[in-house]
Length: 104
Image 1 (cartoon, rainbow, N blue to C red):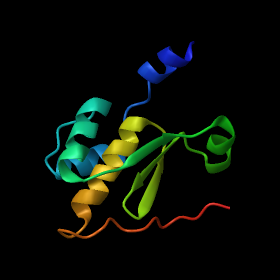
Image 2 (tube, rainbow, N blue to C red):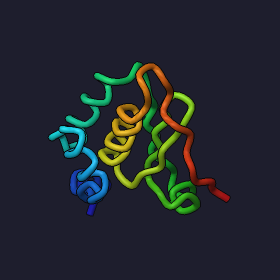
Image 3 (cartoon, rainbow, N blue to C red):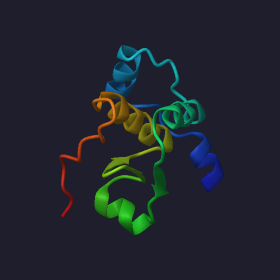
């Protein structure tokens, strides 16, 4: 399978993320719709696809940088969804909480 085919067949969002999105009234679950929804709620972010060495070390493929925090995820859609949930959970005008896990 080529890299392009692999990206096109990314795994669906984790169940906890889907549940949280539905609880917030967000029907979007594909990468583009989640990205657009995130862009409606935040001034800026950076999505980084990690190198193979970094992905092995941190056990994730994507890192999204959002204000003063970051989130590690397996897919771009998951990164957008988790960032969106973090932004929506933060009090109005506040930054999302810092990550609670540390990496060796």
